[in-house]
Image (cartoon, rainbow, N blue to C red; front, side, top):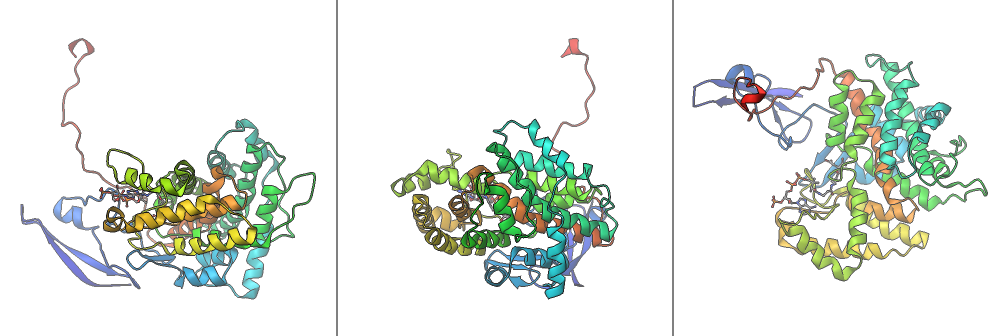
Length: 431
Ligand code: SDX
């Protein structure tokens, strides 16, 4: 990183100016450091969607939206998808380097031996109705973990941070499976230490008391790949939420729970659930044209869920991988889902339509993922929970990076005030 140059900003209305350092990173756009701006000019910057604003320096993930590039710690997502595993990617995101054999064995052993949750946490679920959305149960349960773990809450202690990261990555599948089991009124399943991460999750999800579950290597591989693809994505809304909450010194469980609630929104991680509901609403390929027309109609708030992205103005590289996976996994599982035909017809129609082409709206990570989750037997309401299991690795990596960065300060944006000017209180009988 070098502050090689600067840019000069002059306010011609009053002649005040500011010499702003230009920060350059390893790759990607340089950043104008606007910290001196208010002191020099009395002005704030204004960028409500943060479309042109870097909130932090980070070494974890790099995205080039124009080229459709995504790299975790410099490794292209295509290579990690083909050659790595979710646990290895989690280690990479947390530590910055791929693990050697003994580092991975230690990490996997740590994760395996932190998968259980306190028995009293299981009683929390009894407070929910069975129709509670799993994301509500997940957010509440994860936030409550700080009530059980008091030995890893010193955010300034590196060992505490590492233990909290291990606990979160290890326990998310256990809690997620409990959310599902509670919603179908099945007894919870304890994590099996003899199973690998994804198989252990599938076992906790689907093993019924009356007979042993036959685990599918195809399902496990597909799910592991989806977890890799969803593990991190730079400063997206939920990761930025985790960082903002973390900047106050909040404990890791509270910070990650905030990320879970941010992810739930249909404009973000909730889109995968919304995509499937949209495909079901469209129903058949011959109804696609109408859906595309509605998505373009400004008087209709219907959007093509799973399309568009704040950063990608090209194909989301994850969507490309998941689309290819769809065909392979459904064929290997012998599943024929007519919604895949609807999705492909929708993609074809949108990518030929000027409205989408002009706005550079392409399928994103959420467009096809739900079709695979459905083929694996995962209910629609659990789709965003799946996203949260994977993104926990990225969230906690960013939370740790933030606490390892010297001089980190509480995040406290300013505003452009458009309310009333000063006025005096008037008694009720005078209003
Ligand atoms: C994720 O940030 C991340 O990295 C997120 C994520 C991650 O891994 O963390 O990648 C995961 O959240 C993926 C996005 C999932 N969301 C959806 O699929 C929901 C549908 N998409 C949109 O709502 C929208 O595209 C966003 C929210 C993703 C991006 O919104 P922006 O950048 O604020 O874009 P915008 O709303 O300003 O749209 C620009 C134009 C508008 O039209 P005009 O005003 O120019 O006429 O494109 C239109 C929008 O109306 N538009 C769409 C559309 N998305 C944008 N029109 C129809 N259908 C859509 N899906």
